[in-house]
Image: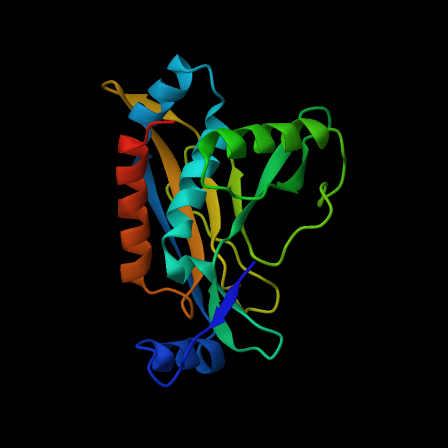
Length: 214
């Protein structure tokens, strides 16, 4: 893990960061309908599972979006991690609870896919919020709510101070005229990213899932 502090004397968002860190500690959420038709078809044709394939795509896009890799060092100074690892949820059918599991991101799809599938299998019966130990500090959250086709979603913390890392939530697949869509929600601190950055992230993610060859 590499953390690069930001040179705040030349940072174009320095005043924005100060404002949204010290004066107005707010975050925001954006929910869109992602077209997952091509990705879902490819996954089916190759006998893969959609969840780890999609988590890979999101992680790959985060890897090239510095505003979504933001964090703070021990002194509280802002900077960027070189990589964020996905922290995702697995659902327990027997008691309807969930657990968090994380998998280290690697750019090689086959390696990541195998590692995530192995982690899901290893920790599938661990009944705890944090099922896999050793979660690194450079992570982001992603989860599925496959029972609901929602149009909006928001997460918040008791302290009222949003986390710098993105929290991503996806919903139920819906098919209409041969097009398969899925609700996709991003929650992020305004100190980390503005509407422009989140818009570009979502737009580029859509391009990625349209074009990627797994």
